[in-house]
Image 1 (cartoon, rainbow, N blue to C red):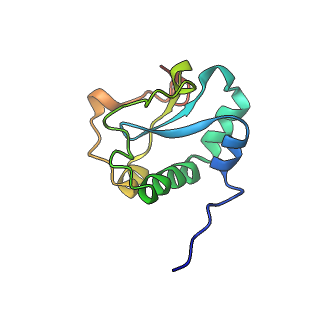
Image 2: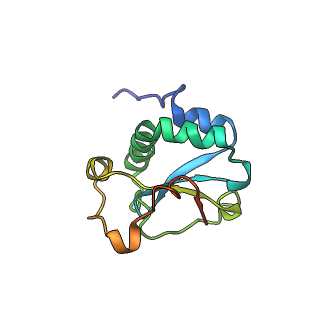
Image 3: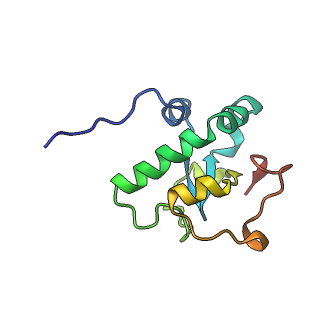
Length: 120
């Protein structure tokens, strides 16, 4: 049996090298900690959204995370996440690819003006 190494120079690893992390919350991508996110980082996430989503999804799969898409919305006591997060809505193609539940436009929709700017 061979061991597959984790990627070393991907958009997600570049984010993490700068002190950020990313995960799913109700099949939306969240990046944190919010106080450190600049417009440059925000644009980097937008430009690399699909690659980041793929890698976060694969991590959850290989770690056998039972809630890899974040429907249970547990923070796990992560102090960086408690500082706030920015949220990105995934398009229907990405949602289908990661196996997300059907999209509920009433409760899960983020207007384009807030996509990547909505903070909680």
